[in-house]
Length: 189
Picture 1: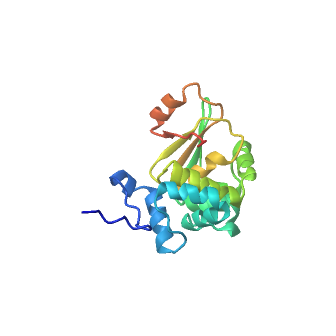
Picture 2: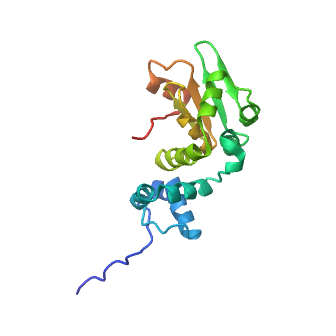
Picture 3: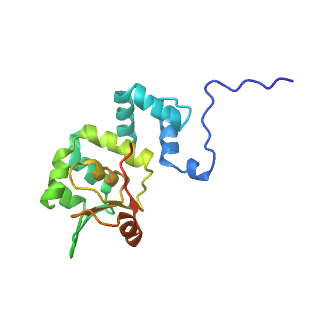
């Protein structure tokens, strides 16, 4: 007896609990529920992103609740909510900046320059990286050990957690991440 052919557009089913509770699974379900796109799974999402980037980033922006009217810093601050923060780690100091400080521009020059480098298009790309690729969650601390040269690390704030930035790149980023109870951010290739 021949097995029936699988449905062409059968819904994707997560393989395990980790996949089922991922932000990617939530995005796939959101795409279906809003009739935005009918992806077959994570690989199909990334194929869509490559084939129709404008449509994909517009969808990820809506999924993440981004609002171009708020601007870059406003979009980050909204996502940060009351819990999110940036912690700037210096050799002998540590400073914490909340959403209100971001909106008021009450941040050090290095963070201000990162904010100025960002725009609403960057927010959507950052949402894809930080929410879908890196799977950052609101209860996480994320450490960026690299230079404070561009806005990409700030996208970690879209998850609503705490972003740790270092005034000077640490000699042992993995050790610092463990000591801080943080995930180490690495830019996707």
